[in-house]
Length: 73
Image 1: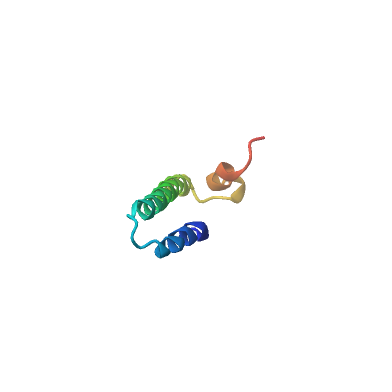
Image 2 (image 1 turned 90 degrees about the vertical axis):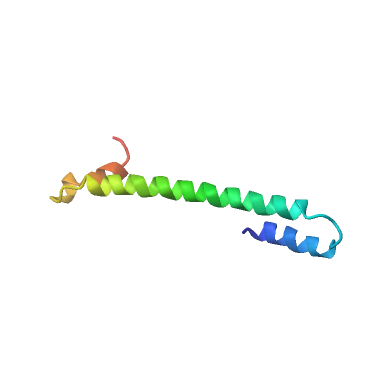
């Protein structure tokens, strides 16, 4: 959780009689951020796995992983 979100949550502790809609929103926003990061990591894992599977051994000049990571000429 970001420092800003933690500060926002902690600032709400002084308002003990109010409902917890704000706390819920902050927690849901954080959950959505985590879900986005997980999706990004899953996509990255897939791409890296594909690059690894395409590797045939051989020399670096023929390496499919290096080729995939290199900028287009």
